[in-house]
Image (cartoon, rainbow, N blue to C red; front, top):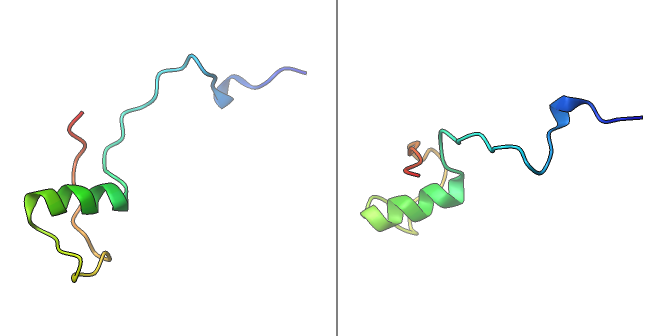
Amino acid sequence: MSQHPSFGGKGKIKAKRNVLKRYERVRHLEEKGKWTPEKSVLGLPKTTVKE
């Protein structure tokens, strides 16, 4: 039995992500000086991917 084409494969192109994950957003905001470790990680503003 073969796999359905929607499952994808190794040679497929990855879709570009629109927003970063939380740990990536924290790192990005920390570099810009908009977040410090004393602040909560909940309710962070969404940041776009710059790739």
